[in-house]
Length: 230
Image 1 (cartoon, rainbow, N blue to C red):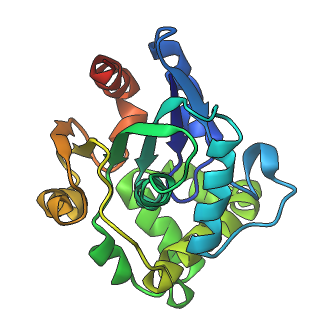
Image 2: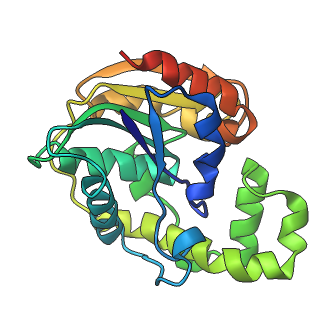
């Protein structure tokens, strides 16, 4: 079975490369690369939420057979994208999504209230991500890294902003697991509200760590996911 993984804002497919070492042959990690980063660096960045959902849908459809079962994992912005993709893919006659993992993901209503990214300077975005633990502090002083990273994170925050114009249709029936870091209070306060947006929450699981617990404790996260496979 394939587990498609979507990165957080500013992330790439490399976020999940290490995960492949933690799973048996029962689960194949497929880390989706978004345009404008990593192996797709030469492609233009996408700044529109709806367009990015379509891009991800096509990537999944191209990698599964017509009746193949698969799972979907998304972290932070990747979780919101995974939720919207699950809403769409249930209505398509291609593949069967049998488990959704929403990691460090706030509920849709909270994303719709996100501060306008155009009003945030590059310095503010870097400080925000550094405080969350998403960027080592020393990299915020590295100009070569900033030249690569800042356009990506600005585009991803524009994606978040454009979500306010995106219309969700339905309430996904796929069994869903909510994963959060114990110290990530900006997200944990929303975890029970997911019942308003999903038909079946299988479990709400807390891990040690903050917003980027998946990077600090990948072995624990992967072991948990592996044990979810029937």
